[in-house]
Length: 605
Ligand code: HEM
Ligand code: SF4
Image (tube, rainbow, N blue to C red):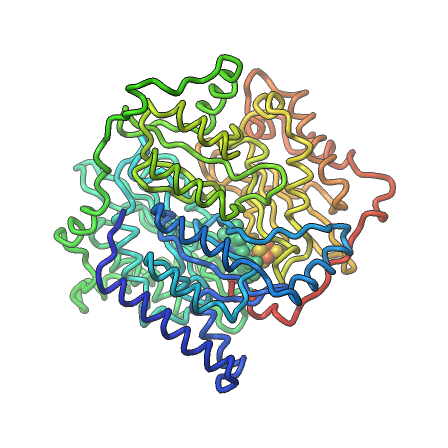
């Protein structure tokens, strides 16, 4: 993992101290709420539906066990609302017939970050200090700046990797942090980078997607995609450079972002993302980037060129950990009981990935199970993940785009022992990439912008599909759920997408079909198509069932769901979804309490 320099450490500590000073002045009444608001947002503190939400940056998804333990401590000691906040929230939940409100956990996001939903603002400075002890923070997790750079969860370990994207992602982290010119862009700006042939980082759906590749001479370079994004207008990124010499990437990105900064629609926040500029201007945008790039190279003297020495310095942090022969494997004390062999084999198939080092494997711990929202991990689970990382994976985990945790350095000989330990912790469910490994945003349970709740929908579908035989038989399916059109749950790219919509102040759900994140399984990135008018919450599991039954009926051999939809055609599935409408759904329609007081904060998220 990258080792922070003294500069980084001091910078993070100084930010925490600055936040404490601002908080104290706010609590003392000398810094008004309005004055404090932009300051706390710059450190990832948003007020949400009931309580502050903290977003912690996890650069390109890499976490050490020490960092995980601090996240566990924050979940355990700080992720608890005041009684007043709790009573308000549980009161709102009661209207939906819910009596239980989870507290004390962290939530992994599709952009490899971690969020907490209940920390009282008065305790925010203590939490920032704690985070700083392990070089963590919430800087640039909010606002119209360059956000956390995301990458392939298998970076540096994937057998299909052309080059390790992490040194580049780290250099971009340093470049984008406090970049003076790009602190107030027209809108937020998200970059994802992959160095593999398979795209596991949803690069086509980002403001900038970068593919590390090599030319015929074996020199490294980047394919550059610009203007991808979701929201109300889903757009797939446009390739504006097939091959950019890798050491020039910062000069080029300067041009990409500068032209956006100059022409992005600041007059209309719904049209302010770079995707709208690229869509509207097309070749004119590309030409202007090229002109700007040439100016940076020739007139400015290419000031952001990465030197080989700097690349080597950063890359030295990413050398694989020394391979330690497993003492446990040598003693063969852990064996898989024969009656569990089938479960183990399934886990090997779904949760264990091949590695660049033939003696190692990358193992995904599943955070998708009944009773907890997708991507949620309570304090004990975070501690357990840290212990598993220490014991089996050189103290390192990765946050995955699908909201799980991955152990990147597992000795093949240790797999049975890891499976036993992860099973005891409830983290060895063999559902990775299957239906219940769904993506979901926090939705109406927490988010001030939501039109509908996501979590109960995820829970209802998870409950319906508990049978592992059935799940494995259905095969790999991406189900993505967002509580509103902001698309945090990436519903556009789901093979099945579910979107919360508001009709007459009530919760409804639009279902779409055939979307793709651009990964090998799903084919080229494309937004799904809506199957028809929206459904009531109680209808949704039936709709999913109808879609999957249609798949079973039409499937040939081990064909995947998405391939079957493509072959058989959208209309057959659309008809099936609509046949699942209930005669009377009004009984179960719920109103979502409005909390517009904080919607402004949420817009910054
Ligand atoms: C309750 C907390 C959250 C709030 C208020 C929030 C708010 C927003 C908003 C307003 C946008 C749209 C911005 C724009 O298009 O200009 C957005 C986009 C996004 N959010 Fe969230 N979000 C929250 C939590 C999450 C979580 C938990 C995840 C991951 C599971 C997430 C992932 C994303 C992603 C990937 C996008 C970009 C979608 C795109 O390409 O346009 N967000 N969020
Ligand atoms: S998709 Fe909408 S409801 Fe879900 S977290 Fe994002 S803004 Fe909130």
